[in-house]
Amino acid sequence: MVHYKSTMVEPIDLPSRGDRERALEEAGYNVFNLDAEDVFIDLLTDSGTGTMSEDQWAALLRGDESYAGSKSFRRLEAAVDDVMGFPHVVPAHQGRGAENVLYGTLLEEGDVALNNTHFDTTRAHVANQGADPIDCPVEVATDPGAPGDFKGDFSIERGREVVEEVGTDRVPVVIQTITNNSAAGQPVSVENTRRVAEFADEIDATFVIDACRFAENAYFVTEREAEYAEASVADVAREQLGYADALVMSGKKDGLSNVGGFVATQDEALADRCKQRAILYEGFPTYGGMAGRDMEALAVGLREAVEEAYVADRIEGIRTLASLLEDRDVPVYTPTGGHAVYLDAEAVFPHLESSDFPGQVLVCELYREGGVRGVELGSFAFPGTDRPELVRLAVPRRTYHREHFEHVADAAAAVLERADEATGLEIKREPEVPELRHFTAELEPSSR
Ligand SMILES: *Cc1c(COP(=O)(O)O)cnc(C)c1O
Image (tube, rainbow, N blue to C red):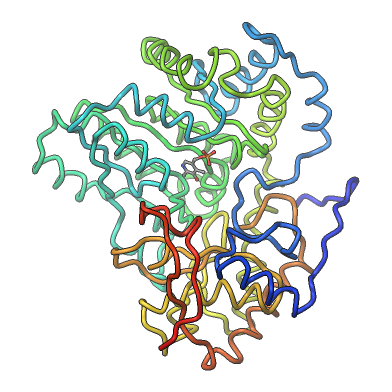
């Protein structure tokens, strides 16, 4: 396991209970509206919020800001080829920029895209092309207590059903998201990737891997898939990604960077088509919305992400948080996935209905109790769907340590202790697009 010492520090402060109470009220009981300064432990997301290494900081100084043919781009290209095995790279400002470039190139009005589970920006970009995003998760994915080594897998059976219904011509793209972010960060086996690649081949579709957490996924594979028990994380990552025709990547995840992303492909013709769209939306194809220095940090981050010691520490950190919570009887989604611990709000507040937004109540209580910021992924974030009422505590990379996790677990235990006193929330103000309401809506304690 890797060990770190801090060579740069950022002081954090737990505001007083009265100040937290006031901040929560002013934020309309929506923690997206809180100032980061008022948050003690920020587990809102693991996206772009991690700590860079000394080598990444050093690489920043080497940034070549040439508009065309930047040396920094060449170094990024080399890293993507070495670590992921893809020779053609089209950079973008972040993952969703890469999604726009790739899905805008591959999809047309009336098409269908299959995915184990579409991440929200993926779903939105597929829909933005006039195509229909259809999820094909395995059944256990949405069961917070069900055992399973690879609950993130793509259900080929479900995929075939859809293809039979709509016809192969309408399905030009099959996507596999590793780990499956929207299914509690659960991993996907290499065996499943291989079978999805065959399935995509059969129906003549482009097989895309959403590779945001490819290194975390590879770590689970070395632990759980017998065939890879002796393999290194780096080898598994290259093999698994190698089954795809193209990748979309967010540098803010397993790129260990604060910004950036890219499309990568084996197919030069596809890369050329992507570059045309990238010029329109992202930038010239040797920077794509990133500064040269950002490409340097990302190139180093990709190599660090597959180092055994780094990724072991990463996954063990998530497990430490989960087990501290379980020690205090806080109900968590099991087994724990790659980047976050998910709390089961229905089990915390059995007396609340889903219309009371139990997940959002739990998010607010965690802030009120400990200045901890998580995010609701239940009936508040996904109106009109029948999802479990989960709260995600996403862990930024290389940022928090055991004492922070103990604080989070203690705060959750205190919430649990007086859970029966909690009352529901109702929406006071929400934006026009209900799918985006959890970012900006305001709530208030319900009058019922
Ligand atoms: C974060 C994420 C994206 C989008 O990346 P951004 O850098 O946030 O735009 C796409 N897919 C998955 C699975 C992600 O986790």
